[in-house]
Image (tube, rainbow, N blue to C red):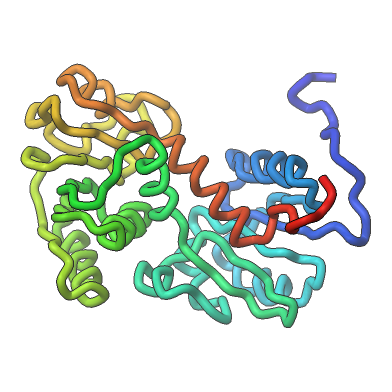
Length: 280
């Protein structure tokens, strides 16, 4: 048998097993189940995460059904459902409501579905874990889409001295800045251009760099060695903007730490950790 299609080696699944899902369309590329299943094994938790391939049209029906599944612990939400899921939940965190998206949902014992948004917290947590503290720093953020929205709110919550948002469609950057101002009236937020100079931390919050030949998300000629250049894209590990930043002498920060930190946050939110005093 081809090794890539070998049967999974799973611990025994019983009627006591807590079930988790990940909602996506398409879904063949997801890595979260593998990582969170490994985490639950390490934690000695009787749980399993499986992929739920659901189209946008069928999302409301699925969510309604999931509320009735008593063995459901919750689910992770990814593209293209992060925005649509918010209005289908019983409760979301303040940050998820402000961002307008949720990427993790917990099922409470009474069937209520409670959501949060961890993209931004995961990104900032990954920076801090690498010794790059954003508090008091000036930040340039390229992008104003889904991930960039969450990251922008997380940066403001982390206490940056200035946040500059630059997006090819200026109206989207202005909309994000307006929502930040509504939530944080004193937040130092500006609309920028492709020029990232004059900032301590420079972030690519766009999808530019996923494919060979993508244009750079900002003017790399304006980078300088004292800047940190960070990426949300996880694959390839070194995107074109990170390579350009390295050539300019900048410290670079890849996308993978965002995922690693976010998985820990997801595990806590979904109750995947071992209970205090529980046998391992």
